[in-house]
Length: 213
Image (tube, rainbow, N blue to C red; front, side, top):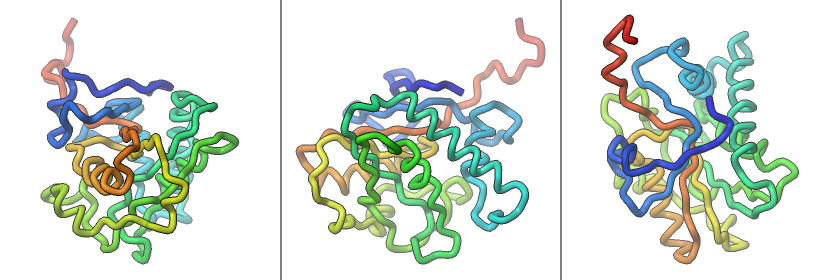
């Protein structure tokens, strides 16, 4: 797992259906869907980050806490500590009133911003619960997310000028694009970027071979 981030470029852009050349997104690692936590360090980190809140209080909950701290350190190493940034978490799949609501990204970003001028704001909230995208039979489209996304007007002052939309995994780019649209409509002058712990990468054809040299 990198302690730095790299940009989605022309080679990796096609892996993320909803992104286009006007999107600037960064990620630290590559997550391979369909594989368990033992497949790679990044897979282990993501699996632990996504551990369901119904595991709270159980022995395995410590791994989620560690993953939040580890991901925060990755972002702290990557972001300039002297620059003012507004960090906006992508809303989780469950609304705040849902018992299954997971605040992992908010907590992660508060660790990132500790003792720094970074500004953490839940500017976009989800008004209704949806199935978690990574567990659903069909991933939502941006239009479906926009129907349940809402800007929290109480957090719009001061007006941000450089926004990073932050999530754990960049998959299709659907959630990023929906949040970006909400923010761009309200803050048309702001620079908006994406920042992810990992991007979902397709499995290489090399994985089909046991002893390739």
